[in-house]
Image 1: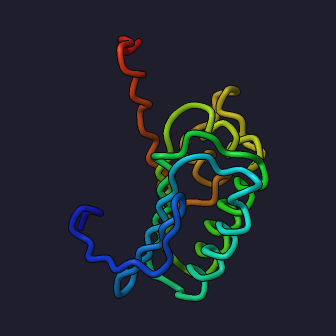
Image 2: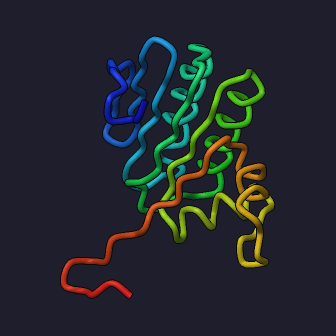
Image 3: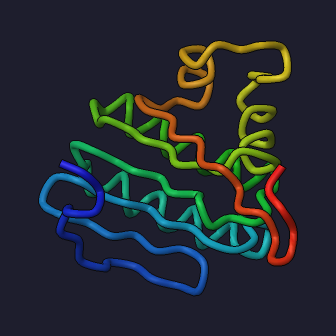
Length: 142
């Protein structure tokens, strides 16, 4: 089963944080800039997601342009608590600054040649999907 065919129904929505739930899964999709202005909303959605006790949790940061340390701690806490409750956890994250902030807050540096398993463990997820960052319009991919 892929994310594309999982039925979802919105539970909480805002301009930058959406929690979608199905019978046994939850998908947290976040977009934009996750800074102090969004942290409280993110924390509220974290508590709601954990209250659902899903069998599978996907945290999708694919559309996040900026992530501060406070919001990174909320994301990592969500993944850790859900995994501790037995949920399969998946983190979808663009390669680059957002992933780097998560790694630094988690105490794992990919710059030191961290293995995929170490990164997944440090980021508290069963599966880590690192997406490529699309080049800005008018710029060639490197």
